[in-house]
Length: 153
Length: 155
Image 1 (tube, each protein chain N blue to C red):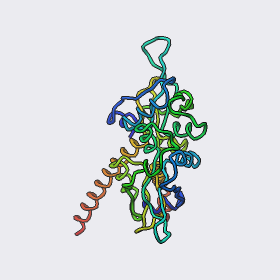
Image 2: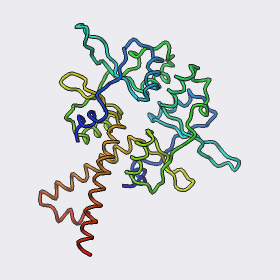
Image 3: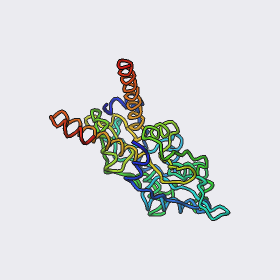
Image 4: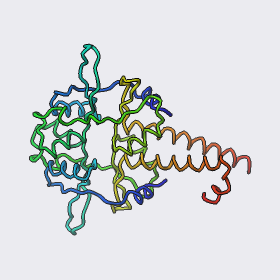
């Protein structure tokens, strides 16, 4: 399975936030939508289009609070976000996504299609997809075994 | 694969916190150890450590969204989830994946009867599943390349 398949199931919608927004607004967004990250975007010079400049996660916000005692209503998203992004492509195999998440210890992968943000895949999405695959293969295997047993007895 | 196999690889260390610690202590601990949850434990009358809850990154953000109060004025027991979903040591990888997906959680304390034996996170599960797939792939490749006899003895 490839990441495009996951995005097709869960949807392509990405929640985003501006870099100059305060962290308390970021927290509100994360909690309201019960998600773990927001993509940080700013408008491009061309106007209508937006450009991804980073990602802000639960961990980033707590780290900002712990390390520089940041106050949520005073600190901005730009001060806490991660700009060194680990991304994937729509054709990336799920096994590769698992390896990227494990190696870099991240839980969200922006999926880029030729420079454009197509969607975001979280570790929860990856696990759900793997669970479905595993459940299906267990079902096939038990059916296969039942068939063999039927043949042998 | 069983949950006990995952614990054998990652270790059985559990990061704990007292229910009367402040929320900013909890944040500090999470960041220091780079983990996503702490098990909330208190001593009972017999002096035994007892799990009373779990506190996660999400809990801490949710508390701050609901009550804009400085973290050093919030207590762990006001923020934690006390309804803890746990998994048995004999559980499988498949069980753990099902529980996490169903309850939308990322951490499961692993129990052997009343004893907590460790904690597994969604990251541990994805890593274990990835390693398992890679191993299968390796065996299949060797098999296809005509080393079937070796594979037979290994399996």
